[in-house]
Length: 349
Image 1 (cartoon, rainbow, N blue to C red):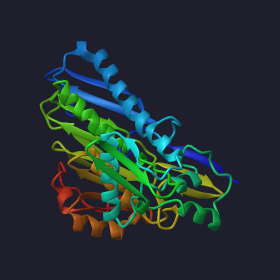
Image 2: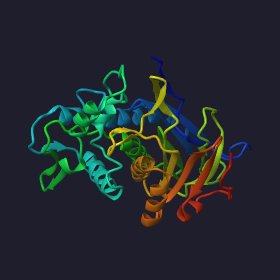
Image 3: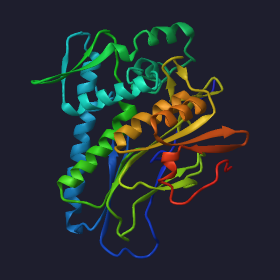
Image 4: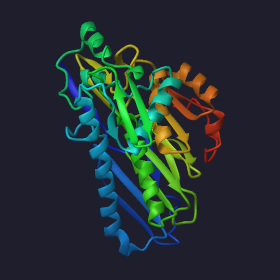
């Protein structure tokens, strides 16, 4: 039996472009660190270099706090305690978590359940959660048992004058916010920058990115979508975010090989199995990184045909890359085309 994990370097399919090669017209600063099992990066313009240490500490503290709330890997996180509880009564959560779950439920409904934050039992079954990796390919009985513990209809957000709560009607329901956690943390970093009086920044957590203002060359912040290959820095397309958030979900970045077959980390909640279709990358640009992060996973699960139809119906800014023969073909919605730095032909190998 062949068993191999392959998790390539970050930031997962989004390349942060430094801008022009000429010297910076004003001061610039780049801060980096680790959070949520991935990396964060903050690029700043027009910021006093003497603030670097304090900013690094403040950013890390905030992200550590977010991780302590949303992590499924930390047994004492707020989310883990909700998952461990068998109670069917409402459990108190922060306003942030209530907002995340509300948005995830909305996108989940619009994708027909393709984006499902209750898919945790299936994620764990296939070895992409905090439990140990499987020694064999799950059989039909195991998949059915895990699927029986999932379903967006079993989770609801309760809002009231005294706060907000999460409630489940299935004791074993397991909520996994990893599909939207990076987007939320990215938006949270952007809010922190604004609170600190910083107006020109590019922030990212994992594959979710958001920008405001201009870079040190007084140019718009730009990012690149990476080609779906193991070769780093291979650019598929470049975009000007125009103050928006962007996120990419890809089936080629996080996988392992089991019994001679590649197993993708993207799980289809309807089949209970990793996706096997030809769509390998879905990129979404939205007003917030959280929303972009929510949509990209659902589109990846749906596959090219359904993802295109949904992008048109919902008027989403979407860029899809599919495997075709020995190369790749790309497709973009009209809304996405408005963000391209320059037109690029589809069907690029």
